[in-house]
Length: 622
Image (cartoon, helix red, strand yellow):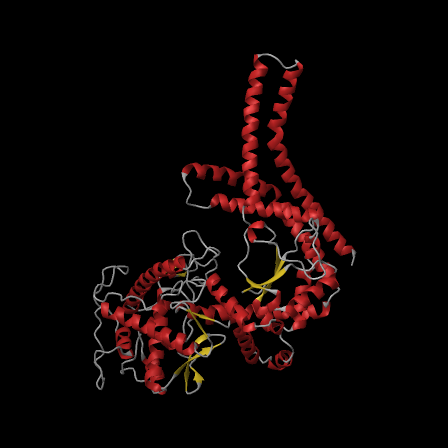
């Protein structure tokens, strides 16, 4: 297959690859320049032309300099050649576990007249790309496909990385159309100049990472700093050429792929945007609360289908989507889609939240049927228990309402009475971050220690969020302004923030030790010295007022479940939710905000009375 656009893009990529290789050649020339000068001086002495004390001193000086420069160049070259290039964390898909998927990819490569990818892997993200893993540090190269013998000088084709949400949401034809321009990129990648330029750039990038690794002694640290300086200098010299080379490769691949399923690709691109929106919503609203409780949903990709189906129903697009969902999904190309979904879900939890690489007692999988009980209900009761611990530390008296079966028990009425009374808050610690000595924090339960940060998305009854630096809003002049609320709500929110930060510090230390104990020789370390730290944390910062609103909402939900027969539920788009009489309670957030900001419990009490929720009855806590 040839074309003007394909040839132009490939020619531009090759010319930029040669420019990158010229940077390497110039660096090599600079390294051998002192050696060349030393050879000239030695040759002059042997022929009797360059004689005398001055020339002898020059020969010694240039000779020593040449040896030092050659040793330094050899050291830098050895580090660049031996350094392991970074690879994306993925779930490998062997050919025996997805023969239909490999067959589709190879058929697509044949139609595009390009080499087939050497292997296929999945990533928990809505993207697809080619990744070169031909470096010896990544293990032996994969065996060539049947009927495609690879010669000794033929570059190993890259690995095709596919976003796992695409396999579950897209149909087979749509996935084929989306992957066509990606697979077409293996054609330019097979060119020797482009492959050599990419190896050089990846080696420099890996050398910078090696030189920046901490924990070395002063002599080694100095040598690594020199290697890193040289590698960065060469990267700056070839950065622009490498960027333009990749753009040329992408342009050539796009032009080549236009002859395959072009019309279907336009429709499939719409599904890419939908899959991205559903995946982001599922991670931040549904998966994140479970991760914070030490549970990771084991069917995230299947959850994307449920979330997007619910989105289509709410947006009145169900008719078109229903006919589309009747076609064969791309996940049918896998032999065991459930096992692949579980592996991708665990990798997503590690990438976006942190934690061990294998399930354990504090990091267990949860299916969607058990999500309301194991995640939603437990989250509410943990937050409610924390709220009452803080009230105990502040010296807030239990509720004295008539007819209370347990006057000293944790009741919603205690929270309402405290926040409804304006004025000076009860005596407590002199500083918000001073430990709450009246009620020491008990050890966190196992299921509550697996989260990365308590600063996650809101619980049921989502509250409108707007916060700037230090959790405060910003006025028109860019200056921080105080959060709205009564004295009691502000004081309670400050104590909750301190308590939450203290619990998170304990959980982080426990998680770091557990992740380090489970760290294997082939495990990925996200950050030096912290095996459990995720590289892409999702948690947005929550202000003190938002934390208080979430805890009060959790207390209301606990009272509704225990006294009015409400049930916790999972909303695919909004996460944890409360069902009252089979209907979702969507009007709770404004009433909680009125209580916190204005100290007016009237709207919330009316809402409780309308649904038969008794705030004076104690609730069950964790």
